[in-house]
Length: 192
Image (cartoon, rainbow, N blue to C red; front, side, top):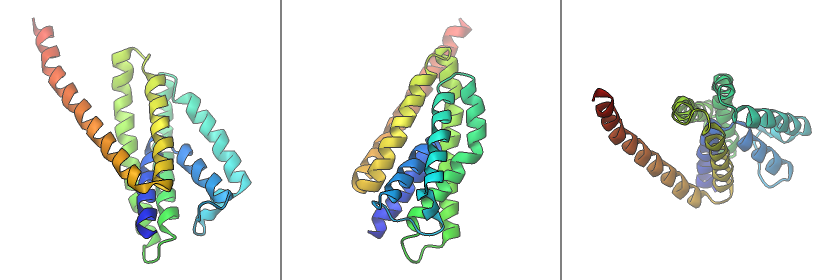
């Protein structure tokens, strides 16, 4: 059980780096339905005001992240929100495990969500530039799906989440490698 909570904490913090509100809302609803136990003070997420606020903020973020240009403003705002959400989710899920310091858990979640967010925020202008903005809604929707699936797997099927995360890392590695191979050939074409 303790290992599953730690895997869930990593998965939820990582998902928060893509979209802060999806994993927060999933955790809040599951805690409200007594399907997930949150340690105090994080159990406040299960309150109706918190759930309503998460739905409203999630809808705003969902729309804003699909519009080229607006997505950059959204990413700037989310630079503070996503790491905080990751810290809360990590601490809330590891808090039920005895012996893990809350401050350490908050820092781990903050760092993990910050890293995922920084990667997302750096990649988005490249996608928008390469596709003239057409790719923004598709990439954003893919990020939302990854955040949703990753969150659910981290909570309900931690072993599958580990495989899912490994698959995403492998996919990212392949895409980066491919982009690096294409970059020199593109510069050679411009030089001619």
